[in-house]
Image (cartoon, helix red, strand yellow):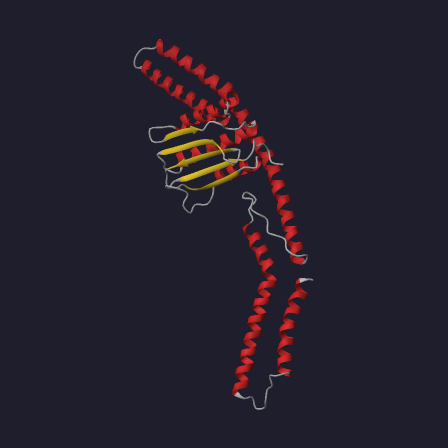
Length: 317
């Protein structure tokens, strides 16, 4: 039965009951007596209440579907609204669920292509930084050393200072190249890569503690890369925006199988600030391997990033 006929028949039933009462035990005299006015007003109020209740019950599935549409977020998959009955609302709910499934699948496919291209571009830039700019600065560094050793003072002191500035720039380029392309992840695995990442972010103002619980299941390269990038983004946010003094990075096996990553800091927290591109990037990476990502306040303040990979990970189907 269509929504139009359902509402029409509900109202018709209420009005038919009212007419039956007027033709039966309830009568109206001329002039209208005060008692009859009370009866009519009471009957009208009863009809309005009955009509409101019946419409509320009849349109409840549409209200649930409207709430689901308003809160739908492709980066945060939620339970689909339940399909009840065989009417128009049930058909509309099934169409909405099918649309969400299709949009999530298309977004996952496009995100996988974009992130794959992004990783390839990062690898290319890191390789160029290392092979071209790094080698050029190394040659400049050697030339400065050769000139400084043969120059009189104070020219020699200035050349030594330029040599130190060049060495610092070379170290910075190497650090950027390592962040763009985590070679230690490919060569030594996720455990060593996380420890190396923590050491890069450790400063006199920020202490990073890495904990890796034994018994982790084997992970494919795509899952390891997602775990590494999420940890990297969490540490970057803690170092740049949170004003944190301590960050904990914990990699552990989950009780039901799978792997969990926790990045927790003691900074100022997210507050009411909207999610930036970094957190949205983490959500997109989590969707690629079918993982669950939770970003929110920690138990003692600060910010907590939880990534839970069920099974052995891998790209989502």
